Image (cartoon, rainbow, N blue to C red; front, side, top):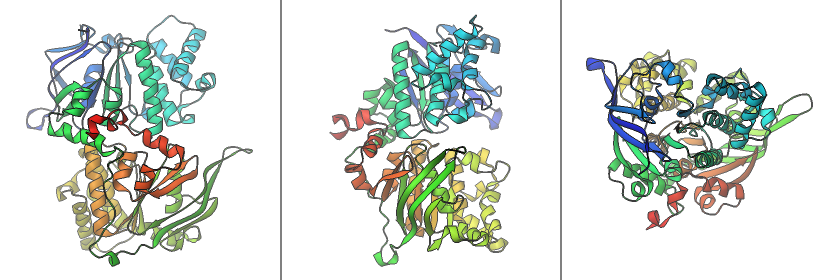
Length: 547
């Protein structure tokens, strides 16, 4: 049997005291052997990140930690000082954090942040040696022109490149254990696949042991050798990947594994908009986009064409998904449709109105009919406002009704998204990720719009919460005859919620069609690459799932 690198026995992490106490981890026991790739899977609040932070010694001071055993490489980490931890982090255990936007210093160059790895380790290296090693690290994570990248700042790199820089930093001192906390959750499927391929190769070359935290069971099955399923602070299932996928023991694990089956090529759920009387719904186009283009000036000589000659229409009561990798022009199109960005060429018509021709007052009225739900509710919801204030904001902004009407509208909106009225007095920080996104949806619904634009609304949510929000959106569409423009890089979600899909690449529309035909018979090679990159491919096409 391989040597144990990480040993945890009866780990309990608690916040608060007495009746206000919250048990984040409840007697968790885990052993990770040298060379093992272990994925920790579970929904938001399951304790995954708390467990990772306990391993790294990064729990906040408010956390009360108890354990019979908590050891790395044979050394107990219970009660270590920050100085003692500094000898362990980087060399024994490294971290790939979730968000490169928050983890990389925006005012320091990539070279300076890579050099910091060696400087903090107090290695006696010359500046030229540090530079040489930094270049080697960027080459290992397959970043082109590494010499030039050292001089650049994080904002000058794509999301996938920034994530690779974090991987390079984590491998700087060649740690024995690598903790990866949702390292690709914000990336589109193709970039995610590329980044994880780089990680797999480095892990194999260095013989690194991995503790991989993720809410995506498909990613876990594609890359891990072992899966640990957590829920409500406890480990409810632990086993090799094949046994977890083929014979899951708990109902919760069966639900997670069911997500892999759902994206298999033969499974296409019917989510088409229906009513009891087909004549109740008009299939006229509520959005028309014709030869749409958007250019941004880079400097005096160069321009970047973010959107180039795009045309499509969205019918009343349907969901059109726009998919594509980062930088494909998806969000730029949404901003032009809602009127936040003016097109350089072409026309946008919404509900029969030419958006470019609208004056300021008419455009405000337009925003009442077409609402926007952003990707990250954490940044979209004001942390200083209660839920009541957040949902009331559009009503006040559009001067809708009196106090009594607004009270009823707010209550109806919360009821529509299955939130209790007791949530009205809460603040965003007191809600779960799924609840915060429901509040964002309620804010969009409260003014009774005809169209809602969703910009990556589920990317930060675990799969169980994603399922709940998808079911909610489909119910709302049926009940209120809503039209959705759904921007996403998650094709498994797109397949469940959309009637049609438009595929974007480098500003151009490469394919558009009914969801069934595009997924079953894509005409563009790029579309096929997107479909093949959906996580869970290791098992979804195997006899294990089709039997």
